[in-house]
Image (tube, rainbow, N blue to C red; front, side, top):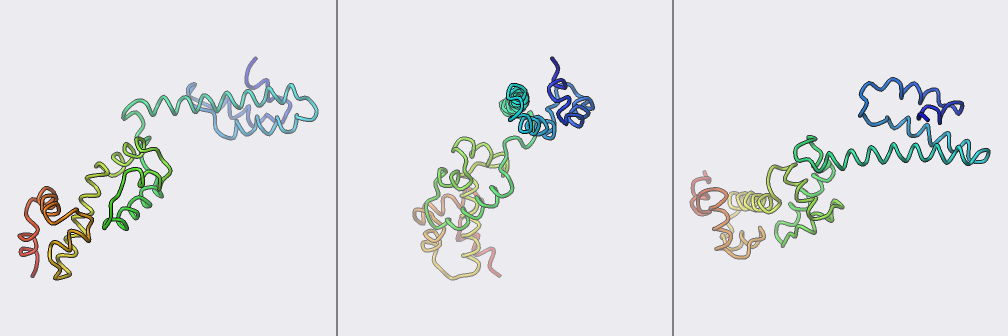
Amino acid sequence: MSVVHFIEGVDGIQAQQQLESRSAPNRPPPLTVVTAFLDAALRLWDEDRFRAKSQIKVAAAMLRDVAAGDAAQALIPGSAPGSCTLARWQARMVKEFIDESLDSRIRLSDCASKVRLSNSHFSRAFKTTFGTTVCRYIRSRRVERAKQLMLHSQQPLSQIALACGFADQAHYCRVFRDVVGTSPNTWRRQSLP
């Protein structure tokens, strides 16, 4: 029994036309087709529950196929561009959270919970979105904040280190040298007019 048979006679003409117009056989059904099955099921519920139930089964099968296809696609690395990235609102929220928290300890779990993702999924999506790991991104943001403080204030390096979330001045100097390639003092002298 075809899918079209289930929706015939129950305002299924539009859904039938959409099913027939689909060109690719493995392409998921449009959402309008699935909603047509569910609408038909609602209309049939009081009159013929057996037919209504069959409409719901077809819609559920379509949605399962789409979900299974999405899950299989996500398992193949690089198969779907953007399949494991942060949404714009998630990327913005994480950036803001990190920038606001640079003076304190930032945990991966805190970042992941801000955008309602598991730690592992967040790490993969973050790396795909930003092109670097969470740890390296936080380090670079701390160094950028430190550069701004060195240029616009006369604070000693020890205070700048604490204001940017580094454990101490030695930690700050080590990370700064790794990221920038020179010591903070040398960079400060070369960058000031």
